[in-house]
Length: 600
Ligand SMILES: Nc1nc2c(ncn2[C@@H]2O[C@H](COP(=O)(O)OP(=O)(O)OP(=O)(O)O)[C@@H](O)[C@H]2O)c(=O)[nH]1
Image (cartoon, rainbow, N blue to C red; front, side, top):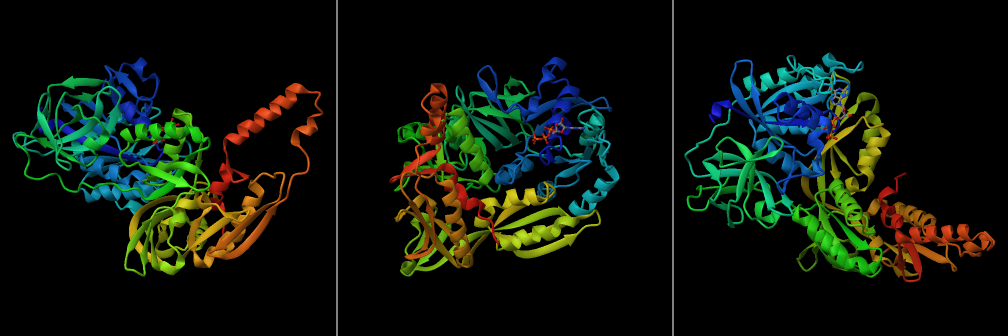
């Protein structure tokens, strides 16, 4: 295959702007699947397709397109993950391309995430082709949105393609633009092999499957390869492309995209961003910028029933096979028993893992409030990484504490900018920039403590702007802050899993509010329960859960057996999400209560 006839591209789009629908149209137009096979949306097939024992992430596909000039082109669509937590993966996908489609919903307009990803594409010298999708909608405003793309993102949008993925409008026009405007890949087909791992996932039968973009040379069946970041070597078993069905080939050549299976047992063996080379004739240096992605958000995961500990450990090990950014290590909590401290890329990543553990592995978990990593400098000159608030050293030992900050860009309609600023200020944000666009949107830039963002920032931003605000962020570094540990005592005992690190200015308020909330969440029992919030040895708030007088089942009069049983079952069900801490039963919500303590 001549390089001249290859085009590698990604689709940049905000969630729901139509990326999957559009990609399906491309597959259909290029004859990848028969029409009847298109019945289900192919590109949303995360429910892992199987064909000859190979698990396929269908999001990246090779399309064979016969253009108006009569030539047949190989168009490689490389998928990008849609969320900020995975921004490193987005950047790897973009590096593997020469072009990108910027798909914007013509009725919704530009969103912050698309802005950030487009900037990145431009930085990597990609040719960006704007596409206005959903022009079939009566509410579509292509002219306004074109103006917005030019104004907010700063790229030419006058000749943006107007399309409807749903109605099949503008599809060929987009493909023609890809062929015409995106440059073919460059590369040395004869040089030492160099391939970028764009994505990798774990397959039960084949081990790690790596999606690669070959830069130089080729990757062949039977070849001895080396992973340049780890030095590990493997023998290639299978190479091929997805059409979206997997098709085996003898080799993947320079400029091309495809998958490599090489008996790699775990995804750590084929990390995203690593360079694959030939073990016998290695490239002198890897492709630039391999980065070990580090978890930024930590939380404790505990089984509600302690006999599920082993199951939880096995489930975490299985999930990690597919996700090298997930970290975990055993942790013991005085209150919750044996569990794991887990590290995630961000809050969404955490929620995905939690949900998978519960849904796919049928585990009942208690999750503690997510926290960031603090750097604590002690008087003895040591620096301690604190991933669990309960482990913050005693006040007397602390010289200073640093916390991570992030730079957040929030895009919001002008009418709501006031509320966004109020929220950001309440979250200890520092305004960096405020840019009014002619298109009626405002780009607000804030430096925010990450700790405030992992609590309820996104949720509140979304709800206060009825979903109109969008946000993108990146880590901007550590800075010293005046932080203290807030403890919660239940009947005089400190519940370690409820400890929080908060800014001193907010400590009193947060303590009072949290105690109040817990009072409402902890079910009444046969005795009074005292809930206290304390800073060091100083109690700053106290609430009491009054003792229960009557037995709940007594209300059932004994006559109605089914009703009584139902009630018992319901209580048992409810109990699943509870944890016995000393003599007090604490429900799951209580461990997350700290996340939703609003400010005054
Ligand atoms: N009216 C209209 N609806 C569309 C069009 N394209 C996509 N949609 C609808 O918009 C919704 C989102 O489309 P998807 O293709 O799933 O969007 P996506 O960007 O892939 O979203 P995620 O998979 O959630 O990232 C679906 O309900 C589609 O049917 C279009 O051209 N016109």
